Length: 77
Image (cartoon, rainbow, N blue to C red; front, side):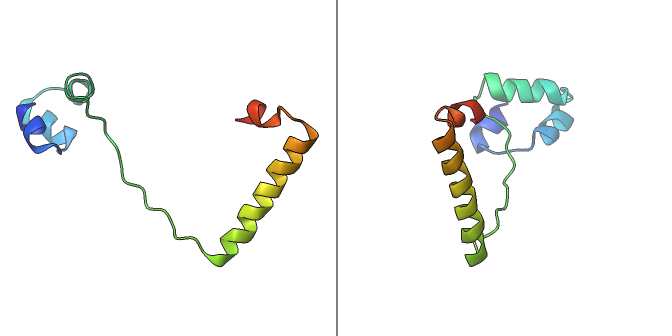
């Protein structure tokens, strides 16, 4: 774990293989001891002019539901 804390980035699978410790134990140690959490970068598409129409339709739908039923937002979200 000292190698992980020194570099700040690593592969939990690589640490598991190199140390002979189970992957679950490595992940638990990273979370509890070092306060590190696994994540995966996600690619998001860029907004296009046609996305505005879809977004506005969604906004209108939410707004109309909230006007009909005032606690709708809290029920759904």
